[in-house]
Length: 626
Image (cartoon, rainbow, N blue to C red; front, side):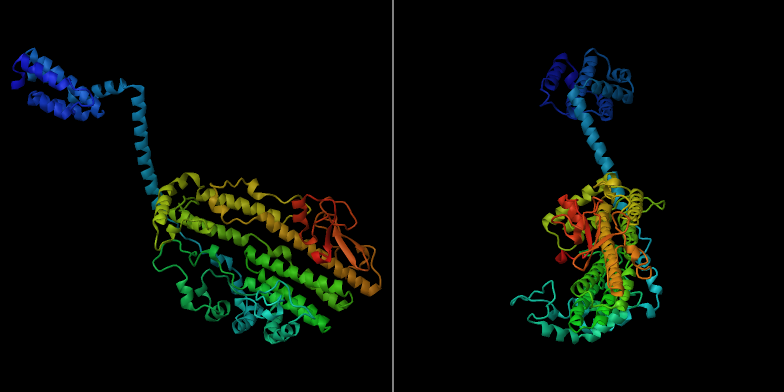
């Protein structure tokens, strides 16, 4: 108060307070403290300034003006009490001051403050999203592995081949791969196995034959088992779910403890180096690829049987190969069907090789058996998307939350799953020792992951799109080849790369599946036609002029051209039938295939090379027979 007793004192105070430039200006609290104003005045000004949401500089300007207001009043001998009373309600004054100052701010400052508030709002919103995202967890409600195996568990052992195969697989450790390496051609001293068998007259032929016959019990088990309608083993995602006998046969180099050590670490709640044991996407197929190896044994035995003139055994071998193909295709996943296709293609090649080399090798009864075996291969039934649809459903329940209404949002675990499946995931998310880089990547996924709530489709959207995909794919799969062109279902359904990322990781390439099916069905038709022609020739000593001349008992239906839906065309070239489709140009070029186009890959080569002027030869179909 002593500072305000004389005009001279008050003038010195004002000069001290207000002469400083803005950068060096005191804070409003210090200004009040130095003002020397009465306690009641400082109290009300403190309340006003505390209620103002202004910048530090703006408050400094405001407090200067308010101090000057009170100083001026007191210089005019108005009491502090009267000045406080006339000042008004602090809340109202604070609101008016705040509004006025904000309104008079320059545009750049208004923009800056708006941006700041926006950033703060975004941070708050993101924090809420982050919490919401990280609170979400998948709910595993359905065991799709059980659904995948539905039916096979109820098959009687008398209809299963596995009880017959199993003792021999255990004895010879068949699951390790080729059990008779001597049958493969070796060039020089190289130790690798060739892609072809050793042939009669080559070094190693006698050793190969001797080694093969040392495994006769294995061969006999396949011959007997291939006659049964089912392979008869359930597909598992966990090695330890197999019985002791099955485990020993399927995993001869593992023990139970080895299998457990390779799994998810105890207590782990994330995704490890391999997917957890109950995931359908991690389903094991330890026997399927080995069926191809089994079929190769019979391809070699056909060479031995031909050398020994045992045509009955050749027929049995081909029947066995087609039985193995059927059993390999038993699982409801595409890999199984495609392995069945590969084995069937091997069997068709063996028929073609024998008939081309020696048309009189088979008698009428044997040709009839071969025809029945080839016709019994229900190739279309071996391929379906049922297993893949279950796989996608299982994946969805492990990636998304479940709101009970068929919808949900992506979860942190979901991003881990997608990273694991893509093979390009962040190593840090799988646990264990983390490097500095891996720690950073893990942090980055944790921070960026919540944005997936806006970029990745919801559970309901993904499920609906998957249903559309499989419905379209199944419709296309059941369409005859000659009815329209195979569809690009990905493009048709507009499967956006990021939005439907979970589907992009696991959906099959339907175009390739369809091509594999079309190619093998066309070949099957060619084989059936060739056998029928050979049977007619044996019976009549001459070739027919058309399919219609062949009795229905020999050929119930003319072999179908997969590109026209009409009968295939045949002609006799050097006393051997040539059977062909009209090709993509749909005109008869006399059985001449386009240049550089292989019969076995006709459709792919025509598309790749852009050469359509020519026919598609389906018998003989082996490239080496061109």
